[in-house]
Length: 538
Picture 1 (cartoon, rainbow, N blue to C red):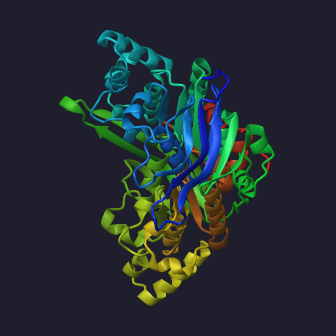
Picture 2: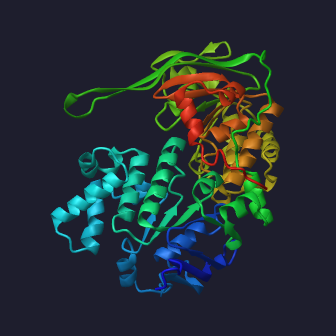
Picture 3: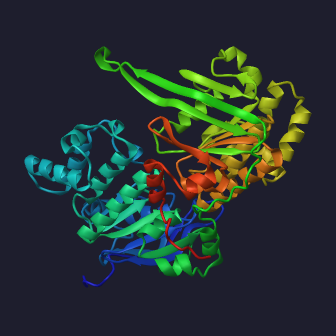
């Protein structure tokens, strides 16, 4: 093979979709290359065909998605229709893949060391002692602490970032020439994401690996990419260097995506500082006692001495990494879990100590929108039935509830015909809009959004954030907004509480926290925001 030739060549690739879909092909006549030591970011919204291309390169496409035309060349070898035996030889040795969710990609009943060793046992003739030394070396190279403990640990015993590093170790242990990373940092906190991105860059430079990086986050693209390829509904609409695509986009779709990228510039309109207090938390705490094996108890302080208040028409954002306690606080406020200590006042009512049977009259006053809208909706019930269930249970007549539901569906910019359809017939962004409408059916005083946009594409995320801001303004509702992304918080929050290890380490007006963060943890979150210093153009 010519030393200057691309590692990966995708030529006029067309992959079919099953009949009855919204289009005939998952991708149509897509062409691009990845060179040695180059990172090419493949970007686009959900359904654009990014992951289908990755699966096609790895030979992992299901039978329902056949390759109709085109070629895939790996170091000049045509692997488009290679037999399974040849693809098995190539995987891990010349091409490897890091998947989005390591917990589902790793075997839960094998130790992490054994899973990396399995790659070596399958593709090399190394002796067991040599394999163990190589496993330990790659674990050290991906900067995991205590390699011996990591090798002996099972996936569930590691954090999300550690599991992703194990996946990277498995992918690179045989130094493949091509690494495919399919949304590998989407589920990670910003600080962990920054560490993983830096690790991928270091390893890529060290080994000269070509990387095909799939993402919908343009902040990540700004940090990593050498070149960018933009997909829209299966069509490749723009290809160019990072600076060409991100600063001088040519296609209208690329301009729209870049225009939707959240920044650290505040967008929320100032709320009335003298409005009535809707929610006040004082000394809120939640403690868990893990009895463990052999009676050895371990106390976990999920939240400690949390204090804040939210006034009518205001949005308080709680920001922090996974495990910081932010979702625990939200669930205590909604009383999905019982606080261990402290006070939660909803208006004039203290609700932290109320028995569950006494909570029913207060449930309608607080509503929550969860992260995953698909799991939040009953797949066997129409949207109309899901929306009217709460009001009807509280005594509203069915006809009146249906009329209110139609009005709210239109408020969240959905067509009234959505009422007769089922959750699976909508996109993720549409489902989240409907979950917001359902929450508003109860005329809540407080709306809690728990990572409600983290699973959405950047363009859909921007639409839903604008919707939250519009609802807050029009309905004068108080909002508690939980997120791990400061860029998202900047779009909707009037006040900010930053949590770390169960405690609020910084609290105040959003303009003060964003303008002059005081705590070192808050400063670290700002520093980790991907693409924070990149000048995007649209």
